[in-house]
Length: 444
Image (cartoon, rainbow, N blue to C red):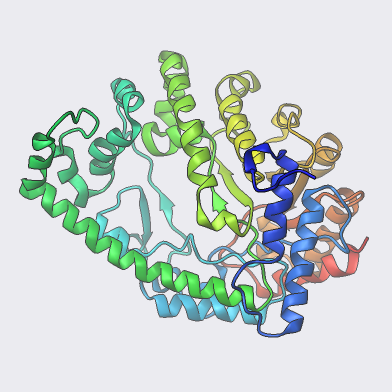
């Protein structure tokens, strides 16, 4: 028998089995009753079997509720972002009044006070750049890394992010641009230490400390919600988040226009930057405490969709480093769950090149019959009742769409029912209809 105490000697399948065992038996959880414990294990087992391309008792469901709990509770996203008691009230009301196979805590309902303290530029949110009643936030791209700064990033990403990116993307942290580099420290670090005496540097650190104290309050609220979900028998469907290196450069540093120009004007530097990010992305996720309980890693994909680049460009610029990140997770026993935003049908023959039963592909715009044909024997697939139908359709229409998807995608296992994207304002009965459809039509 293999010695499981030596993690590095295990296969990725053996590592994953150990992680699945922990997901099934999360340490320290006190269930409200025996039924909650039994239901928790049944729900996790449902997802594990789907991931492994086996047939569970029925098709598992990932309810597509993002900011929906705020509106269902008669509140708003703005209130939930600024009032953590309101955040708890809304998400716990949703938890207690809906049947579901998995629960997604409000970890993406970012704390408005923290963003305001930092002067965060990369988002607009309700009450800050958007109307108070806006149902979601808005991402604001910028060229936060100039085209001539690739070498600075490649030399030391951490130093670059602290002294250049953070000051440009957070008005309260502009003082960091006056810090001396950390990496050249040799001997007595007087020059580096002296930079902390600058009033602007000190002011930025004070703001960072203030934001940190506020963030701890928010984390405590999210933690209480997560704990109640677990004790009530509802598992989380993802324990961590990551993404593709191309998106990380394009979203945060260069912007869509910048990175598209880089593919033509400085492709070598772009490749170097993405390769530099690969081990950072893997290590950051693998070491996250949250994935130690739920081994699924949610990965929203933004710029690899059809229409943004050709298949040839996808194979040259997007897929190689993204695949390395995926394999880095898989080799550590984690389960990547990429959310393929946009049209990924042109990519199917490319992305099928992965170990069998190692990941879940969540599709937004996709011919699911084709996805099942190309990927079904190799990867679990999830999706994709259209958001338009979920929002405006009747419960009968929802059940009909779900039934059609189950009929096409469920045979042989390896299917998770959900919508084409996560949602904010939606008819509550349509979410309930999705669960009812899985129970009625999704039994194996």
